Image (cartoon, rainbow, N blue to C red; front, side):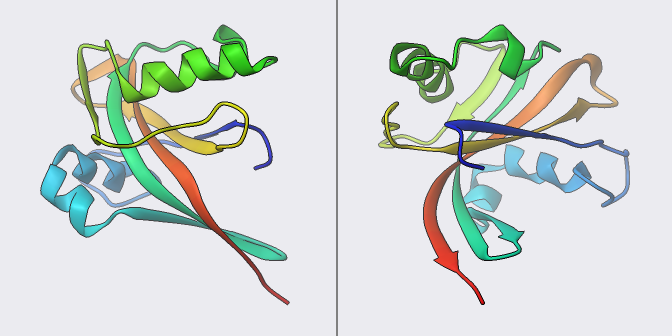
Length: 133
């Protein structure tokens, strides 16, 4: 969770609330406003992320298809998150991502049953890190 982009893959099981199936509720902007955070619990800290975008994308492997080795590469990817060109996407307005300091997680799941050749991606920006005992 120290890299600019961390991708977590999970499955969607139609008509259930198993694994990442509930992520599809974020299609509704009202639901996103009422449930704006994702929490990651690690052994010595809790990471809080604000959901900033949702999108249906192709099946590409994010980490191997983009250049994250330089601030320019990270910046270009961050720009694609904030200004998506995908067929279906929603990004919150007024959000910024700095390529030299911000970190995001992307939860990636299948788009079953609508299109098994696509991925549903939820992107969230790290907004708080709390140390635990």
